[in-house]
Length: 265
Length: 265
Image 1: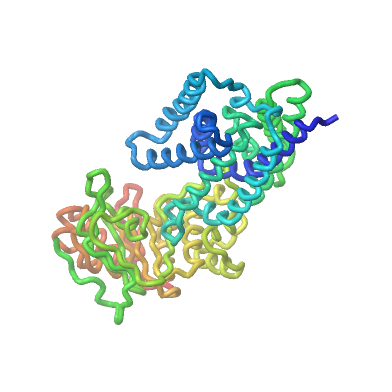
Image 2: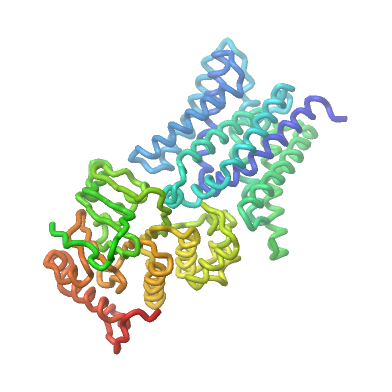
């Protein structure tokens, strides 16, 4: 009963959720939800860029999103404006720029909805392979930089003072985030990627007593949401992204209920 | 600016930190300039000065957190730094026990953790969540964390901020003990002009630059110090140096008790 396209979407979605859970923990620990949103919104520019340059979409998106992230870092360090004002300006400008750029490319037909909200029909076999390559590499790198990244997340100055290189691990973290955004587009869509980062992590918080536990629980919560959301998408013919996000939200609400019944964890 | 010779009491000082003509500028504004100071092994150096006088900036430049715009900061080769920052907010969304927090940057064995927490009388906090600690408890944990890696130099930025007066005395006592047990250098920022811990070897009075420095007694009687902070501040500084045991009346006035001042430990 499971069609090939659905199995591919399921596999890709699970792969994405495995990394987005742990990365999402850092997103909420570092209060970067808005930053992540801005990065995700710039992905549409990446799509346009790949269509014009005729290169692999994921690669194009990764490049553009990573560049935007680095530009944001520099702006935050230099600009006189508060960080959330900068993000408020850029989060929506990048999205608008992407929409305008795509509209201007009159001769290429683009299914905008699938980029914005995800489309399980769009996941190819190559996509699945790219997802797993990225997942494996992403998790590997994350484990390597785990301790310094955690230290830098708790307090950058402390890490710096005691001989670490917090800026370097932050950069690596942003590149990981850019890659997860690039591979998650087809599953969750540009507008909702941040939700897949933030909601499972927030769900996991209530069940974890260490950062490591929280990362693992977030990955599991992400996988559960993805599977449930994709089945919902298949059953009711809804876009896959919203389905996954709604499932993640329900899981989060369920965690609130469970948590209030027991004090363990 | 006058500078009395620093630290005449240490016999053969191994200089851990040497700051020479340090200046830090941010966005065209000079935060500190012409700062000269050194910390030797076994020496306690206290930085005092009014708000905005550049105490934290000076410390951050020494720790490599901010870049000096002129002058130099030399650290003895291979020394280990322990840093107790002025403010450290742990994000509520991160599950972090004291045990895990203490190993944020370096791993430690259980006995090491126990011993460090014993020193700051915080052993019972080992498995508590850091976000649930009171200000005083967290301060003890912060100091214990820095101690666990047996630093050659311990840098404390206003370590008694937000703790009540008795705890403040206890922490000062503790810092004196640490100096002798670890034989490290200690660089301390004091938030209170009137109270310089009795064990201090050298007081450096900062107000954008080094106004005066020397033993607590020498500084409090110096003209520069009185000019900036007034006779009353100078008086209290001297009093605290000579008598450990006094209390503050609700209005902040110093109430004297019969003193059994020197080195209870």
